[in-house]
Amino acid sequence: MHRGHDHDHHHHGNGSTAGHNHVTPLRAAQWQTPHLPEGHDRADHAHEPDLDLVEMAFVEGFATAKDPASFLRLARIPFEATAADGGKLVLLRVESDAVTDVGALMPQLGGGVMRYDPLPARMVTHRRRLRFVYFDGKTPRVMSLGEVRELALSS
Image: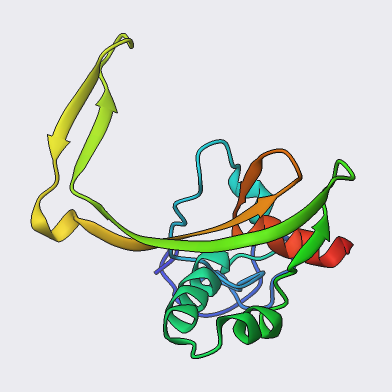
């Protein structure tokens, strides 16, 4: 109800034809919260809002694949690639592990001190973590699926 009425019509010059009682989505909504590796910015994956769902599907499929090498080829994961710095990379392994968050840290007011709280059962989260380990000739480089997909596009 809006000022005594609840019907659809154009309001406030926003250009929407849906009216003020409806929301017109501009793009796909993403309700999951990816747990990105430390140092990664969510904006890095803004072009693919469901990357966490893609990762989950990859982990599930890869774990049961009878031929992991063919699965990687089908997923367009490069066995050899060129890094952004020009170095040659070769794929050594794919790692996935189960992660369960059972506690949380919160900064105390004033900073400098963290408060720990165990999570109640309904707030405990379970997820799979996926990493690709490439070798650059000197050291291993651990990469996320998003980073590997960027490699695949540039190769």
